[in-house]
Image (cartoon, rainbow, N blue to C red; front, side, top):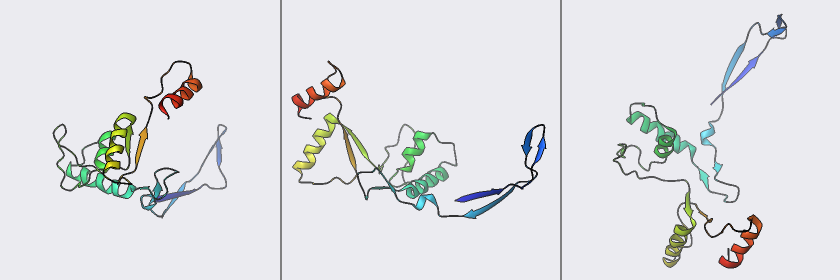
Length: 157
């Protein structure tokens, strides 16, 4: 990554009340790539990192294969998570993609079934960090605090 340092001259010309620089000089120095740094996925799961370097490499491979055609944000996110970007068939609307997500977010009803399957298989841990989002067991009737305490009593949340 390049970082730029700009040095303004000590004396600036005053034109119509505005200061303007007489000359501007830029210097560039090479620093460590931010893609090489380990970034935690969140504050609670230490040791679970996002591999930005691998994502960038995947995206470069896909761009080269697609002749540098412009990509949407969604395509960049999806293509950067391809399992095998060199050989993966990429045809919009037709290809089934093999992905390696950083995290799996599950809705409460489907997550319960998945967790039960993992437990019955004797697995104590999943391969990809997962999050269960529970929001369907709280009925809106009396207001936020009362509804939450009611849901805790009824559903043992």
